[in-house]
Image (cartoon, rainbow, N blue to C red; front, side, top):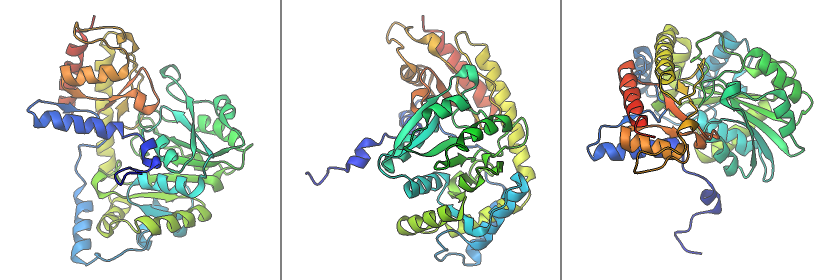
Length: 399
């Protein structure tokens, strides 16, 4: 063994495609190219002033010492208030663990419950990090796919067929990254009817895009009493409050799981930033109208993106009701060429659009969605129009 040899665990993991594409776009920008980056899911809004002020106040009030591992009590109380206010769900502060972003919260859960050989059922398209997190926990991902013709949502029959005696957890997001789709209450109830037959399965519900919902109230799978005691809700402040850099996520779930995640987190990161925690309280309990302003603008952007894409020959897209992504089907361009390169798959097309159109997107293959590309519209309408103009022009070169 060589000293510079990394672990087999790390060798098995893939690099995040969203971060990799963002890095490629930065490299091209540094070389003088005018790149429009639509690869990252980051709101272009700044954190609201009252939240920033709470962070500044936390510094001046000397909240600069180690916090409790699961988070400050007043933040966990604020999260409990938010859960009751928004979803009519009852949680006590000791059922909540605050982490360094929702990504860590998901990892905490998987590392706390998954043993080598355990299976985790994941509907596809999925967030790019889900299968890699399962690998990190030495589990096996069981992917259940759904295409654009069914709005990228699996049904009860597919779920039932994927479950085996080794199934330990089910991991999904609604609203979804990368599709923007949302499971309705009726669709969730159908999935719950399957989970009721399999009491050994922990349901991990990633609800980080809860507030980015254009069609109605958020529906959490935890509302169903028959499975409530085995639902782990993952959420945070990044998307709803434009606080991506503050890195605050949280788990709300059964007490045994919260204790397990607290034990794990205590050994590898301890508590999250004290300043960010105090700012998050201001977000959760302060003026909620700031959310509506952002969501209204995201909806306008969604409408613009869908309209512009629908006008491009060969592009198929749905009309996603949440998050800030579209996942168009681009298979009509497979086999075409501009005379220099042939488009064999979605990854080829993404690289073609980067090099020819100077627009950074992400291949759907990274999300378990071959034949698709992901477009983030968390940017201004002016830039959206510029980017679609570039995409349309580049695609017109393919014959």
